Image (cartoon, rainbow, N blue to C red):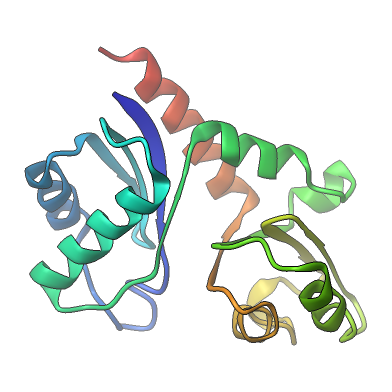
Length: 182
């Protein structure tokens, strides 16, 4: 069995696409995934699967959620090593990193798209696009920032989902713990 970290975009946000995590864990367990765990209500899942393709896992989770709940949900699957690489590549100082958001992209955009997206700047907001992640820092926090995920999705032609520093750390730790369990 291989461990994966799954990110669902846009569930349980503002009363939309409501899914109880207990229901989600049961659904995914009944679909054949093992040791399914969730973290907070925003669609963070750690699970085990015999599937080796991230795209196959994404499709299974997406289809299963649609069949059960009727919601089209964007799904991003990563290995713990993928997530650690994203986390460790953060270009900000440790102090800024702790207040940063990691906007994970489903596909790695072309250099031309990155160039276009990077033209827009706002005062007191910093970001750096490296491979399949946008590292974002704002003194005001992500919720009050002028930039948003929709801007980057449109410019980079891929879907994205953001998680904060603490969530990234917790999911890496959960995945490590899951790997050690039989």
